[in-house]
Amino acid sequence: MGSSRPFRPERKDPVEPLPDLGSLSDDQLKQLIDDLTREEQEVSYQRRILHGKIDILRAELVARLKRSGGKSVLDHVDVESLTRILTGKAAPPD
Image (cartoon, rainbow, N blue to C red; front, side, top):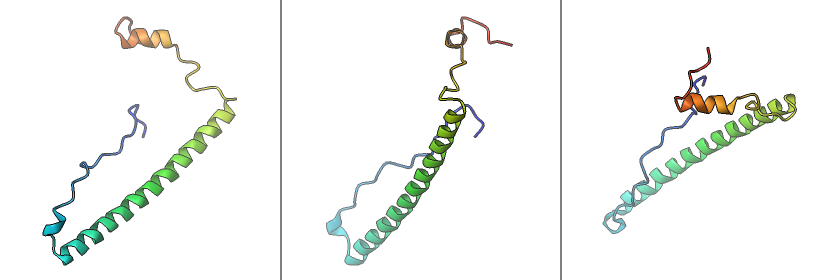
């Protein structure tokens, strides 16, 4: 993840509405329950993985802040110079 663009997981299609439940047979209804239960278990697993990653990243951030005495890594950034560069009013530094 060395890119300057933040990582964004791909989003799936929006939630699909339920079919007309009255038109489903008992077997189709049971299959739909099984399918959705399996999908919920997969989502739950992914959520636990994401929470673990978030915990690791937060611990790393806390460790870095402790090493820097609580100073942000952005404390040394020249915001005015960066603003001029981003608005096209100045050339980027060499």
